[in-house]
Each structure stands twice: as C-alpha cells, then as structure tokens.
Length: 431
Image (cartoon, rainbow, N blue to C red; front, side):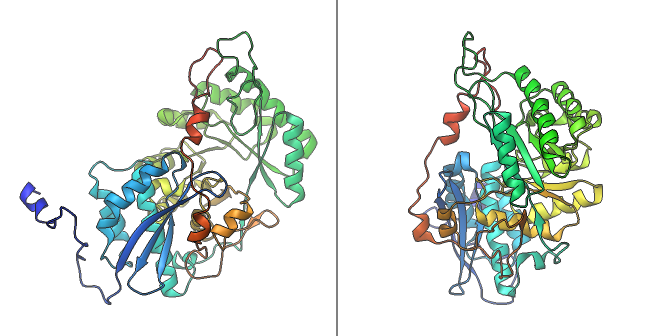
C-alpha cells in the first residue's frame, strides 16, 4: 500500500472511519462501541472489554487481562484495535480476529493478543446471546458434565502447606498443587523468610540448591500424610536450567505427581523435548506463551504433556480452540492457566473449552472474594472440586460497571515483587 492509498482511508481529522464490511451482511446489526473496563476487586488489575452493538441491550464481554501491563492493553485496544472493529458485523469473528492480528504488522505478544482476546471473546459472547445458547454449545456441546479443577496449598513450612491441602481435600478437591516457602523473600507461591542468608550480599535471596532439596521433602511428607488418593502438582515457575529440571523431576518420581509446571524459562523452550524425554513426571507448560505459533510448536514438537495456555495471551477463544484441536490430535492434554489474575469472564471462556474438548486434562481454579462476585454477576463457583458451565446464553457472566469503579487498579504491584527476586549473591532470578 502506498502512502497515498493509506491516507485515503483517513478522514480529515486523521482518524480511521468506521470499518467498511468486506461483504454484504445478512442484516443491519453492527458493532457500535468497543471499550475497556479495568477493575481490581482483589487488588490484581483485571481488564474486560465490552463490545456494544446496534441492537439495544446486545453486548458482549471478553477477558483482556494482562495484569502486569494492563495500561498498555487498554491503550492498544482503545487507540488501535477499536477503530478497526467499529461498523463491522459481530458475526464475522474469524475475519475480525485475523484483521486485528495482521493490522499491527509486528504481531503477537501479550499486549496485542490480550487486546485482541478482549474483542474476540466478546464477539463469541454476542454470538451465544444471539443464538440463545451458551458458547460451549457453539463449540460442539459437552464432552463432560462438569470440569474437575485443582487448587493451591502453600505455606511457609511443610506442615502449613499440608494442613492447607487437607482443608482443600475436605472440600472435595482431588487435585492440589503444593508449594512451600523457604529462606529469603524470593520464594514463589508461598511465603519466604526475611534474612534467610544473613552472611550473603543479598540476605533475602532465593537459593536454587536449597529449593532442589526442599521440594522432594515436601512431596515425601505429602504422600505419607495425604496418601495416594489425591493428585499432586508443583510449579517451578521457570527457575531451573534444563539439567536441574531433570534432576528435580527424577527426585520427585516416587511421589507420582500429575504434572510439574513451567520447569524452565520461556527463553529455553527449545530444550523442552529433551527435558520431557528424561522426565518421569508429566511436563505442563504454556502460560507465558504470547504467540499462537509458539504454542503450536510446544504442542507439536514433543516438549510437553499438558498445555497451560493463558488463553487471552494467545488472542482469545478463536485461536485457543484451534490449538486445543491440535493438542487432541497429538495426544497433549489441557491444563489452562486460571489464577486470580484471570477475570471471571476469562474463566467462563476456559470452561467453555474444557467442557467441550476430549483433550481436557486439568483446570486451575481460584476462589474469588465477595467483591468480585458483586462486580461480575455469574462468576463461576467451585463446588466439591468441580466447576460447572452456565446454561445462560453467551458466557453467563456479566459486569456491573458501577461496582467495578469502586475498585480501581494499582500500578507496579508485580514490579515491586519481581525486583526483589534475586539469588543470595544479588543476581536477578526469574520471578
């Protein structure tokens, strides 16, 4: 396209006019507004996109939550994505998502893909509402009655972690991820101890050798106390070298983990096939992927047993359903990322895929506080270790914007923590 051709698409104010549909739609329904709502009822910023239509009262919601850079997602959506979508028919989901994806020229990444996801998921919500059907029925209907989930037990010491695990088991959970703290403040998923290395340059540091000793002790105690009737998992959080990952996996073999999560950093994912080949424990990876092609390579190249997509970071439901179809054909199962920094709208999108695919493996869960339920009516609730899908059209989750406004976001929460995640010698560690 020449500069003259590009300029011809702009109006006199320099703004892009409402997008002209590339074909004649069968009715007059059009997208009239696209905007982001940011709210933090639990302290973590959640980004939800609302897409309105020319049919009064017909709108859709989509999750665009990239907690650590939420302001960048909002800017990308409102300044760049929304003008491409206004005036389009909301049924053209495939074309709209491809247009948004291609339009930036430099594609992918969690900022652009979360902005895309917000629109994509909102369009699927609209599609369900127009059809009078929940989204999972648009995907082919149920493959299971409900979705079994796992939750997290974590403590400063092994005893505290196991007590939390027993509490979860008493509530019906059969799948529990275990994390334990240790010396220093850089521990992940469990509280650390200040001044753990008092004679080191960085007394609050995190030591990988200590970690490699502590984790097998945790699972030895867990199996002795909890027995074999519960599925156990652990999250490394990308902090090991490939060789260290294999050492840990082999040390955990006697305790029959259901999976070991994020064993190495994303920069080293080309080494995952050799790690998986040497590991007696299933490997689950994928929440830090910000590209559909990178996710496809994880599935295709034999590096993982379970794909842990953060579905909004790959662009929403449209690419996720394609990746899950690939996983099914290759024998990889799903274990979608879904902690407190996924909005309830995103949870509903995860569940629509979980309940409809034969490739389902596990689903992470989070128990939302009362404020979140007020902001998001219809928030899914875990009962006896299961989540059930809503029978309502679309996602079955709504957003109360007045309630959302009472919980404004705070910047730099993750940055403040990640800046102190260092080794005892002071060197930075993956957060």
